[in-house]
Length: 447
Image (tube, rainbow, N blue to C red; front, side, top):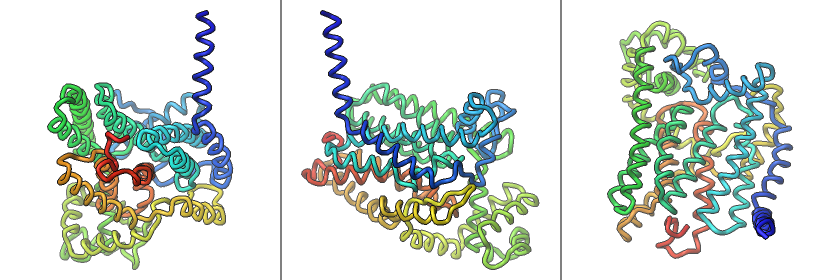
């Protein structure tokens, strides 16, 4: 009798699973991905890739070694892949693992949308777009952190939305841990830390019933901060600069060179050194070459002081303004693959398909953020409470935009990639809720 009940229960579970669109979506996505990947290189590399591949080969973070340029999470993932698969075809094996990681991301993306909206058609269409768009898939074959950070951000988003729906100690505790992993994968994602500190503080003040639960979130964020401070202290101990990496200093120099702001810093030895290598116009590769020469002659402190001075010039302000305006017409994704062989026709086709599937420009993102900020203010004034779902998407997407505008001169699509999944989720949420009453629009209680 008991065996019969278990059998019936098992059939019900199987039937429930088979009714989920995600099962059939994953099959369709896998088939289309196979076609897309066949038009991409087996693996792709950027200037960062070699550093990730071998940075922790012979040294261990457990023995106090930290690389000044590459945080440990992604290199250690590569170490695991090397341990399992060996050195031969390492890059190809990394790409295979990243493709598998992305499949997990697709499932998470679908689950998040299911919590946010109820319309199965919208959920299915957006999941399909997320799973097959070349400008997203391309990062699964690059030997860079993007595929892993995409998964981490979706895990954090899932935890956050789940928490807003039903607060729990476990979910609250996981926030700081996931953020720590994200930052130690890609330090540029540090903007998530102040956002979540503010989130926890505001929830603690406004939601009295959650205070005991939020203590676990506070604890996890404190641990996150302590680990990061210890990490930065070790960087200071080894390399003389307190920070997560030395990349921000390098990017500042590149931005100053790209902007031409150095021309306004007269009677300065660093400017004189730059002028020895300048040709008009300075190419992207040339800025890296000049930065290398500057690093040979000047200390990090001298270069930081110089870039801080240059960034206050009118020339640099104009450069930043023009950068924001010119980027407005560009698509948020790129399907331009690196690596061999390079097929120009395939690149053009993949780029066209990407723009068709995700016809979203940075200018559109500017408008969405502006409208969302106005909506948040209106919602706060009218209902005397915060719309947490809207605030989450608006703050994280805006912070990502801000960090790459201020912190890096090149590769805007790559730097914005962490927010591509958030943009699709946010747009899906807006579309799914648009027919509801205004007071319920994007309200976590309506999910």
